Length: 313
Image (cartoon, rainbow, N blue to C red; front, side):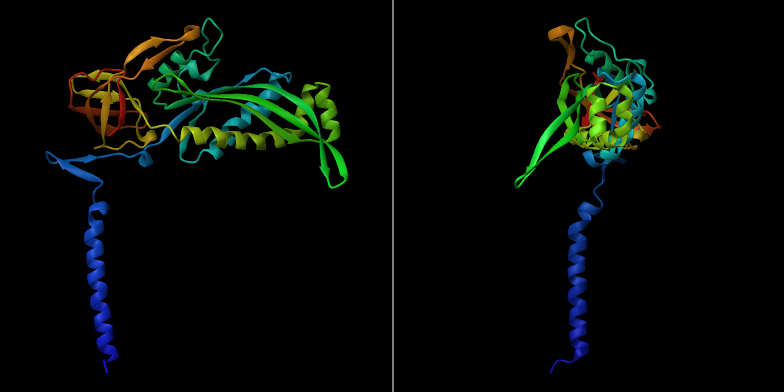
């Protein structure tokens, strides 16, 4: 009969062998965050360790409610609700972008559309990846008949019509546009006031409306998460280049990015202009990181200019 002591010893030996094999197999993944190049650490960033910074601009009020009510219900709650709906994304208030094109009334083209080229140029300088714009089109009362078995009942709703747009800063194109019609159940007297287009009546169910903004934010952020991270070169010096992203975007010294030419500017319908993505021009490595910017040196390539776009290698 084999003794318990021997069994224990065999099990211990097997455990140590398995643990050693696991350690050797996992070693590559556990310690491969950096590689050596000419004796210098190089980090290869991934989408998971970079933070997308998104500007949420002021929405327009095209509804019948007054601007005071709009500010109190929508504008003052949009940021909080969208921020809660977008974990892992850095949402920037209009006044925090540091740019007049993004913090106030958005610039328009001659045709009356938002000038996406101007706002995305401003976004590049501010180290932003995407810009959210939108407007409240209307709030209207709606009655619906709901039935259960042989019972029928009329229910009152407030229908919120909004338009949400997302612009990609790297290209200036609109990557998302949705017309949202959100139904919110309200009391009969609130419905009557809404049908009478009494602006202040909307304040009576503002909490219900602001709850709906969270669901709208989730839809918007789902689209943003699909987009890749981009960085932007804002100046070039003899000693290196300056990037408009820093600690606020998760950049660290040693990270290496591919650089792409800013590309050609092309004109579209309605006076809009866009960036046509260019070819790869080289690679850069981050050497100094600050709160809102970073400095990098050129590893390869000799045509990296201000306006160049950085992508994950």
